[in-house]
Image 1 (cartoon, rainbow, N blue to C red):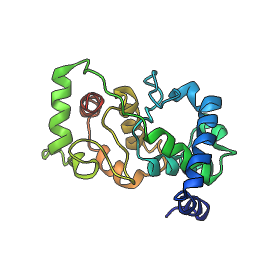
Image 2: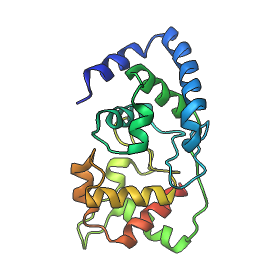
Image 3: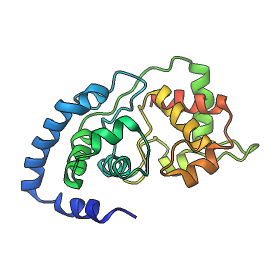
Length: 197
C-alpha cells in the first residue's frame, strides 16, 4: 500500500498547474543531482545505474519513496531522496517517463536467444515462471511493475541476483520465489535478451 503522503502527491499531480511547475522543478532536480548517474534524459551510460527513460512514472515514484523510507536500501539513493517531497517524486517519475527507452544490440546473441525463451515461456523443468506473465510479452511492464525492455543487461542481472539473495528488500516476495529457481546462466540470458528489446 502506498504511503499517505505519496497518495496525496499522486492526487495533486493531475492539475495542469502542477504539471508545468513540477516538470520545471523535476528538471532542476535532475540537472542538480540525478544526471550524475542516470543522465539528463534517464539514458544512463553506465551499466551500474538503471535507465529511467521510458519507465512508468508510478513505478519511479514508488521506488523513490521506498528509498526514502528504507523499504529499499541504497546508501547513495537514501541521501539523494532524503529531501524529496511526494510531489517531487511524482514529477521526477513523469519527467523520466516521457523520454524514449534505451535499447542496445545483444553482446551475445545465442545467450539472448536462451533468454527470450525463458522470458516468454519460463523453464518448466525447474519451475521458473515466464517473466512475460507479469512484465508483458514486450517487457513493457505496468504502472506497478517495471519496464524491463531496454534496461542495461548488467543492471538487470544484478537486480535478479539481489532478489535471489534477498539483498533487494522491496518488492521481494514474488520476485524471490521466481528468481531463487533461476541459474546464473538463466539470469544472464534473460538480462541479455531484455537489454535489446
